[in-house]
Amino acid sequence: MNWGNKIVVAFVLFAGFIGYMVVKAFQEDFDLVAEDYYAQEINYQQKLNRLSNASEEGKEVLVSQKGGEVHLTFPDKGTTGTIHFYHPSRKMFDRTFDIDLSDSQIQKIDRSELIAGSYRVNITWQTGEEDFYQQSSIYIQ
Image (cartoon, rainbow, N blue to C red; front, side, top):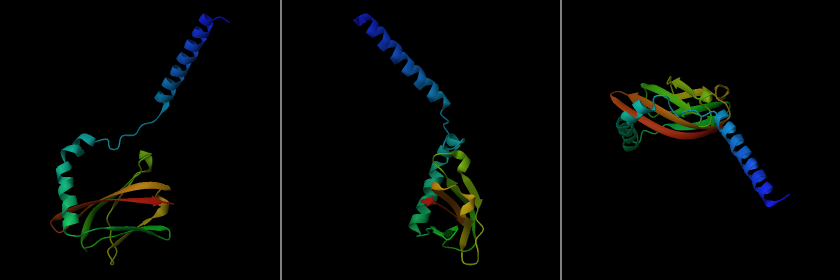
């Protein structure tokens, strides 16, 4: 085999590899972090204000796992809002819960409602007239 044929074989192999990579890239499923990312970006200053309210007043929500449940301990009674479990790898594993506190100011979420993996917990809540926001990370086993 002369050097001209080797160049043609190398080019054909390279073109085949590039074609394979293009096909694989089109088969990959990419989820957006949020479908309404533009609207969320416009409201980003409100999110920063809520985050600032929580840190300045020391109103931190404690996120922990106990037994077969995830416990979120809130600092105040009369709290309303939402808890969003964001799974970074798959949108279909994301879950959102309304805050429904027990008498001890604890929100309990059964771990069976969440797929095992890493989650970013976004908590938005209101107590009285003030709005708060907190982001935490948790690994569900």
